[in-house]
Amino acid sequence: MNYNQLDALPITVLSQFPKPDREKVKNLLAEERSKLNRKIVVLDDDPTGIQTVHGVSVYTDWKEETVEAGFREENAMFFILTNSRGFTVDQTAAAHREIARNIAAAASKTGKDFLVISRGDSTLRGHYPLETEILREGLEAQTDKRYDGEIIFPFFQEGGRFTIDNIHYVKEGDFLIPAGQTEFARDKSFGYKSSSLPEWCEEKTQAFYKAEDVTCISLKDIRNFEIDKIAAQLKSVAGFHKVVVNAVDYCDVEIFAIAFIQAMLGGKEYLFRSAAAVTKVLGGVPDKPLLTKAELVEPGNKNGGIVLVGSHVSKTTQQMEELHKSKYPIEFIEFNQHLVLGEGGLAQEVKRVVALAEEKIKTGKTVAVYTRRDRFDLPTSDKDAQLRVSVEISDAVTSIVGKLTVRPNFIIAKGGITSSDVGTKALQVKRAIVMGQIQPGIPVWMTGSESKFPNMPYIIFPGNVGETDTLRKAVELLME
Image (cartoon, rainbow, N blue to C red):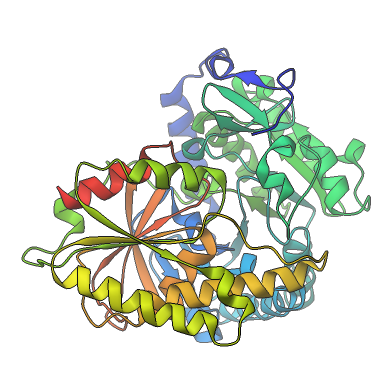
C-alpha cells in the first residue's frame, strides 16, 4: 500500500487515551436509552453492516408491508438491506425515495417514532451524500420531522477504523493509515481524497457544507465525560450541518450516545451516516461470544462447503493466498470474469464452474471459487458504466450458488456486493436473523424458511475486514 509514513500513526496511539469508568458509562447509557422510545431503522448499503449485532432481523426489500413488519417487531431495531453500493445514482435515489415514503407510512400506521441510520462503509465509500439527502427530503416532506444535523461516525473497531483529531484511519499491520491514502480512497465508483472528515464532508458535498462549519466532537471531551458540553454542541447544530465524532473504542460511542439521546430528547433531530458500531450501541445489543462450529454446521451433512470470493481489495487477495495454506484440503476454482467482454462468455464460465464445484462438494470436498485477481476495469471515467459491469460480473459469480443442486455444508461469500447478491438473488432470502459473528466483524445470517437452503447459516465476509489469516481461520473452524 502506498502511503506517507509521516502521516501514519503507530497502533500504540490507541492505548494512550484516558480510560473512562465503563460501568458508570453503561449504566447512564441504559438509563438514557430507556427514554428514547424510537424504532431504529438501519439502512444497510451492503449486508456487512450487521457485523456488530445479533438477534435482529434483516429484511431484503423495503416494500411498505416489509417496513411495517419491522416497525411491529418487539426488537428496538431492524435492518433493511438496500445493497445500494451496487446501484447507479438514479437507482439509489429512487430506492431511497421509496424507503423514506414507506418508513413514514409505517410510522404513521404503528404510531411509533423512529431514528434512521444510513449504515455505510467504514472506509468512506458509497453513495454519499445522495442517500441521506434523499432520506431527509422524503422524511421531512411526509412527516413533521425537521432534521437539524447529520452525524458522520465511521468508527468500526472490529475492522480497524478509527477517527483521531478528525482524521479517519485504517489499520494496516502496526500502523494507522489516513483513509485518503488507502486503496479504498481510489475506488473507481466512490473515490475521495480527504482523510480529514470535515474536509471529506466538504469534498463530497461539493463545498455545499464547508469544513469549517462542521461540528467536531473531540476525544478529549468524550474521555473527560463532558456530556453536557457534547449535548450542547449537538443542540447548536441546524440546517442539516454535519457532526463528526472522534472515536477509538466502544466507550467513545457509548459516551457520545448518552449526549446524543439527551439532545434528541430536547427536541433535536438527526440522521446518521455511520459504520456498524453505532447500531450496536444505540440498539442496545449486548456482547456475544464468537459463534462455534456446533452453531454453524448441520450435523450429518457430509457435503463440502463453498467459499465464494468476489472482492478485489488487496486484503482479500492476501487472505486468499493465506487460505491456500489451510491444513485442510480445499479445491480452488478460478472464475474468469474478464469473459464479460465476449458474448455469452460469462454464461459459459458459470456453467463450467458450477459443474466442477458440484462434483467436488458432493464428494465432501470444500471448494473456493474466486474471481481472477487481476481486476477488470472498463477504460472509462463513467462511474455508472463501471458499476453496471461490476454488477453484471457479480450476478454471474453469485449465480453459481443459485444453480447448485446440492446443499453445501456451509456457504461463505467474500465481498459486499457478492455477499448481498448471494443472499438476495442466489439464496432468495426475504428475512434473515443475525446469528452473530464467526470472527470479529464477520457476521452470519440464519436464512429463512423461504430461502433456497432454509435454516442455513450463511457467512457474510466483508472484503476489507480481518487480518491476513481471518478467512483461513473461519474456513478451518467450519471444516475441523
